[in-house]
Image 1 (spheres, rainbow, N blue to C red):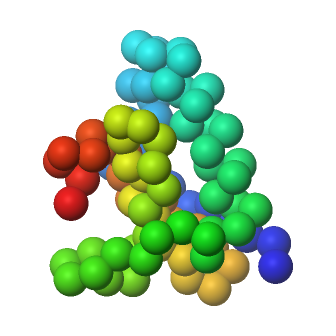
Image 2: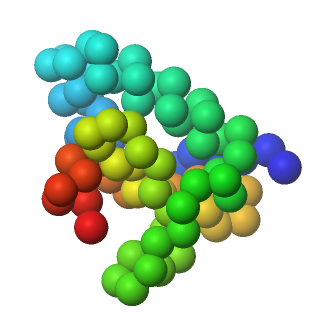
Length: 84
């Protein structure tokens, strides 16, 4: 199945900040997004309030996303301590 990305406004803002302030993290994030689109079901399903979402680790950060049909919705990137 071929997936497409949809970014929340919050994630788009984060992405712009990473691109401006931390080029290395931006590159790592871009690489991880390419991995997610290849096999989003591989990543850990979350529970409780975040049920229906999945988490991809990008040490020390976590990318929280949701798969709906052929669309991957990227919600946010947060430090692991604050993500859940």
